[in-house]
Length: 275
Image 1 (cartoon, one colour):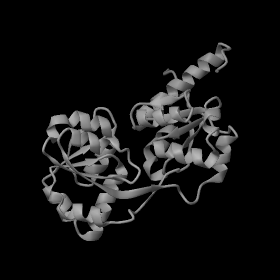
Image 2: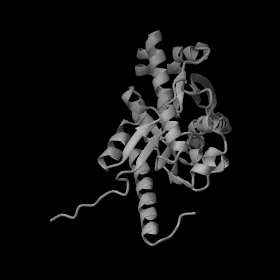
Image 3: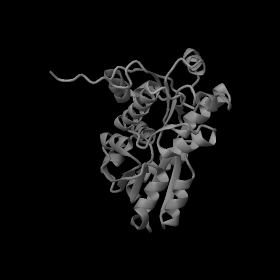
C-alpha cells in the first residue's frame, strides 16, 4: 500500500498580497496541498497620467530592435492600449525581438503574440540588462514600465550602448477597497504565512499597518519574499527572518514554504524554540 505523505502546508493559513487573477495557479496548488490560502491585493494598477509617450512608441513599434518586458502588467498594458488605438496589427507584425525578466512574464508575452527571444536567467531587470550585454549595443529598445519601476534597468541598458525609449505604460497605486478583516488577521497573528511578490507591496503594507509592524510579524509567521529584490526591500524594513523563493513561480514559492514549515515542525518536535 502506498504511503500517504501530508504536506507541511496542510492547515496553514497563507495570505498572498497580490490580485486573485495573478494568483490562480498558486491558490490552486496550495489548496491541493491542504493549505488555506487567500488573497489580499496590496497593489493596484491604473492608466498613465499621459498616454502620449506610450502612444508614440506604439505607433513606431516596428522600428525598435527590442521590446523588454519586466512584468505581466507591462505586457497587459501594451496590448490593451494597442487594442484601443488599433495598433494590434503593428504588435503582431513588428520586427523587434522581445525579452522578459522571468517565466511568468515571458508566458504572458507569448500569450499576447510576442515571440520571446530571451528570458533572464536571474529574474530581475538589472540581471536581464547585464545578460543581454553586447547584444543590445547600438540597438533601439522599447521599455514599457510602471511609474514606480526600479530605475537601474534603463541606465544599465544605456551603459551597454543601447538607445532606450522608456515609457510609463501604467501606474502602480494602493487599492482603494482594502480588506480590513484580513489586515487585522495578519496583525493579530491569525495567519501562518504572508507572501510578498514586489517591493511595492511591502511598501504599501508598511504604510497601512505602520513601519514597526513588519519586523514584529517575522517572529509570528513566515514572512515570505518572492525574488531577491523583494527580499532586499523586506531586509531594509527590518525583516531578517525571511522565507525566500528565488523564482516567481508557484512551484518555487511552494517549495520554499514547505521547506520552512517542515523545518519548523522538526524543531518543534525536538523542543527547540524559534527565535
